[in-house]
Length: 113
Length: 114
Image 1 (cartoon, helix red, strand yellow):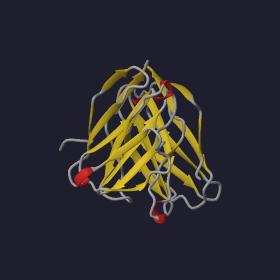
Image 2 (cartoon, each protein chain N blue to C red; image 1 turned 90 degrees about the horizontal axis):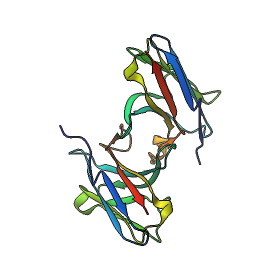
Image 3 (tube, rainbow over the protein chains, first blue to last red; image 1 turned 180 degrees about the vertical axis):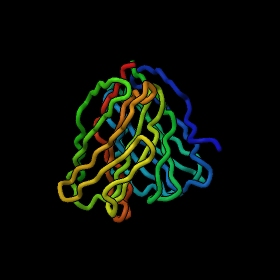
């Protein structure tokens, strides 16, 4: 069974440009998470979806970040415009429910120059 | 909100020795404590977890202990091997409150010297 798939693996963009990350969770997993991981730090939750509903987005900087999970399966995370400080690894994770273990994808490493 | 402290930040051990990583948490309502291993260029991978109704859990060379009174939990790796070298993260959450937000520690870089 395929794990959580993220793309692209790496992305380099100039500041003020838009960028989007894509995540395909494990089949049948209703809960999807986007985490931000800065260098040398643990992951920090940005947003959590239960099916297609965003139920916890308190840590998402809504002025420049947006996310969607149409049809409750794949999800995209967008930044517009990107800033230098957004350089980090963006991790997607999924779980069958909120009370079961979360499986992480390999992440997208974003570099803003 | 929850705060998780993890120590040490780096740990070097000789192959075959044991490694211990410790974490403390602040929210007494937290009831789920997973440990993740992250290798270079990969996402975190769950290696063991423990819930607050259990004091200890073991899986082959890996064990986790939980002290709810002191609000700390530890990861123990015995008979370390070079492939155990990675960054290890502890985390905590309160799954019973309808929120499964994992709060992670800052990680421990474990190096196993052959």
